[in-house]
Length: 98
Image 1 (tube, rainbow, N blue to C red):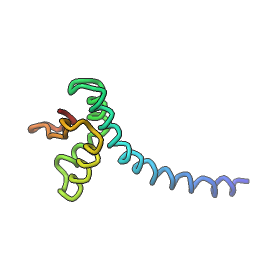
Image 2: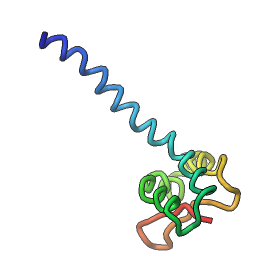
Image 3: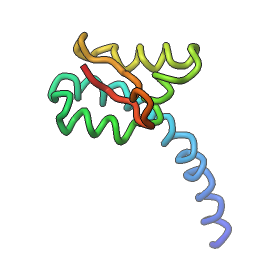
Image 4: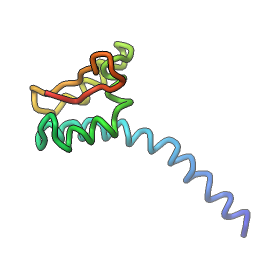
């Protein structure tokens, strides 16, 4: 019986190790789209995106061109046209703003 539990655990662990990062990246675009439509620059929605997706925003602003182009495209795909990513002007934070 203990062998059955060990066999059943590794597929779930592998699925989580692969699936969670994929879901994080995939959910970045819809989070940007939603926050650009329901919130203001100083609002809760934009702040939530900036908090939860700071690594994605940083890659979109300061990452290699081959990566940042795709991240910015994904963020802007369905967002309001006046919203964009920008760096923090010397601070450690990047912003999703209009």
